[in-house]
Structure formats: C-alpha cells, structure tokens
Length: 274
Image 1 (cartoon, rainbow, N blue to C red):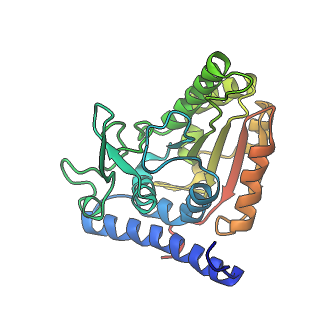
Image 2 (cartoon, rainbow, N blue to C red):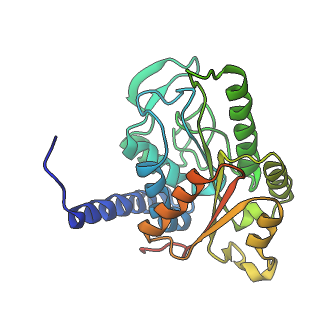
C-alpha cells in the first residue's frame, strides 16, 4: 500500500485533472480555429467525477461487453470526450475489434482535431475512434440511443445472467444539453425509458441557459424537472457544476435508485475557467 494522500492533496489533484481537460479542449479548438470549447470547459468537473469515480470501464479493453456506456449526446462538445479518452489511456481497436496496443486518442491526434482523417473529428464517430460508443451530432440523437442501450442491457441480463454468474449489469450515462431536450426525439425516448423503469439509465442535463443564438428563453421556458417527473423519472439537481461533492452525491443517488431512470440537472456556466 502506498503512502496516504491528504484530502488537501487529493483536492489539488482533482483540480489539476479538471483544468487539464479544460486546457486540452481550449487549445485543440484554438489550433483548429473551429469547434466548441465552452461546454467541455463547463462540464470538465462533471465528466471527471463520473469517469474517475463511477464509470466502469477497462482502458485496455474498450469493447469489454459489461462496460458502462458513456454517450456524449452534445456531440459538438467532442473535445470533452477526446480529452477523457486520452487522459484515461483508453487503447485503440481496429474495425475487426482487434486490440492495437496504442492509445485511441494520442496527443498528436488531439493536435489534428477537426482535420481530415483525424481520429478527433468535429463530432464523435462510432468505430472511427475507439471508446466512442455511438455517433452523435444531431441534438437529441444521443439520448435516444442511450435508451436503446439501456434496453439492450436489460434484455441481455434477462437472457444470459444466472443466479451465480452475472454477465451483464452495466449502466448507461448520457450527457445532454438544452438543445437535446428541445428535440422531439428526446421526449419520446424519455417517456419510453420511464415507462420501462430503466433504472440503469442516467441522463446528465447541462442546464446552462444559453444556445448558439442567445438565451434559452428565446424558445424554451418549460419546467424540465416536472416534465421528467411526469415521465416517471427520478430527478435530482446539482446547483454548481464545479462542486465535486454535490456531483458525487447525485451519481450515488442514481446508483441507489432501482425503480426508475435518473435525470441529473447540472447548473453550469458555459466556458467556465476561461
């Protein structure tokens, strides 16, 4: 066992990791002269807390069947996912699902963000970059796919699990924004998830009150929490995207909820840290 690390030291390391995610996103977008740095910067603490403390995955085997799934429904924030894959050391596999023994996203790949044939295209592409669970970009598509993934886990568990041998028990996390929840497909998918009581599903809603054309109040004024409660979801809120303790409690609430899907509403400030 190594030396004990003080809480103050851990807090410093946490912040260093979060700021590294932010700076990778900022620098890659700046180098490409194209892209969206604001959401990766704002949600770096959320993604770090999830990947460091809750997400079950094997960096050496990105296609491990019982891994937790992480879907970046806000596909334009792709540098958040590429930063996570790079820092977590996720390895690459080819299109035949053979392990290559190299990083899925190396530092040189990040330098070519949004360039032709880069492993870091502007929006995540399934089977182009190892560790990307599904192609996203059209807002709302990712959260809808995540419902299908949660249904698939339930089906596989019911067919293959045995009392003394559990093959499938993974969770599905989807990171979404205001644009995703404005799309009709997200309403349909959320309603189905609540009806099916998919307790293995967690949506993380980036509530930043801003769109590319201005404040969300231009076109969006509904009570999201109440709508999801009516769908049969468990709804919890994190009032500060930078509060790791609050984020951890919210994720633990999801893990402890066994009868319905969970929506975590995270209040954030776009491009925090700039």
